[in-house]
Every structure is written in C-alpha cells, then in structure tokens.
Image 1: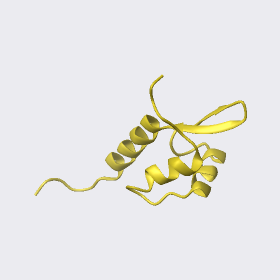
Image 2 (image 1 turned 30 degrees about the vertical axis):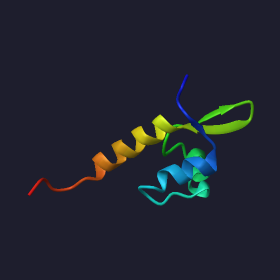
Image 3 (image 1 turned 45 degrees about the horizontal axis):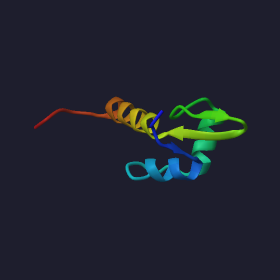
Length: 69
C-alpha cells in the first residue's frame, strides 16, 4: 500500500489545514467511534492520509449550503 500513514499529531496537523482539529479531538472521536477512519496495529494508532481526505470531503459536502450565485 502506498498511502501515507500518519500518527495522531500528523493527522491533526493535516486536517487543521482546513478545519481546526487537535490530537485530543482525534482521541475523543476514536472513543466515540466518530470522525475519520483510524487503524490500530500492534498497539499503534494511525490514520491513512486518503481516509482523512475522504472524511473531510464528505463532511464539507454534508455541511454545504446554498448554491452558486
């Protein structure tokens, strides 16, 4: 797999380019089974960059209002 794996801090930094997300927010979302898909292997939690981008795109699409003027 060639997709970039990001730890909690890098994932939060990546998302924060568009919306403010802290590493603590990612922790809370994991506990609540919300937010972007995450993975855990051998005790290490990570996010794929493509999963973060897909989640962000879907969230922005679901929250958009109005139309073109």
